[in-house]
Image 1: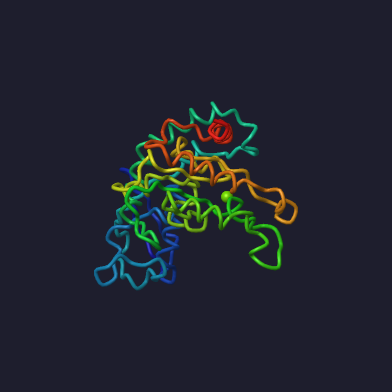
Image 2 (image 1 turned 60 degrees about the vertical axis):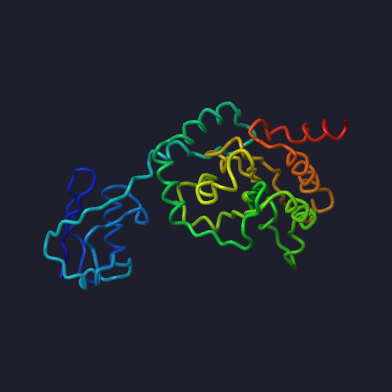
Length: 285
Ligand code: MG
């Protein structure tokens, strides 16, 4: 038996009649995506319920007993505009003129849709809290891949791929900062197209502790700072662990930088791009 529905979205109606009772809610969402461009995970279908609860993706359409041409209201936004702003990623971050990025950044940072999205995540996202926030500490947000570990190289043990001074770095940083590990894999909750790490999510959740004045974020990919350029420090990627283990001192030096800036009440006057210069000035005086 075929199933026909009419999707109402953005003031328009889209008729879908290509599905059967054996197809699932996810199949329906895929069809809707083809018509509207809204990704399945961003779609909310109103009125598709099983025992009073929104139907899960794997539920078969046949079990919903929909009347032919049932109208279903869809809520959800297309990612296109966001995608346009963020993509294509520069092939090589270093070649891109920083000024170009900064202009783009301001736009992305303030885009209302992004702010709305963040507000939603603040509500929905569950942070896995190992330790409660500590009064008076700053916030250090760390990327994992190529920042703390070389996850691509082959090795016998994880130890070999660990960036030198990692333990010393974390121990030292924890004296002044609460630490959040924000890896790409823990970001499934954010749309796959939105490959940035908006600190607003954390600030919204832990506003009484962390804000743009006491937060710093390390990542080897500059684009991840698009939403919060001022708070980002682009760390040199740690790759080819077996070759670089002996000479990589990035975390060693960054621990000192963190110590140094922890003395400030407000990081917003800093340009983390020049962290090495800042550090060497302080250390020579
Ligand atoms: Mg990385």
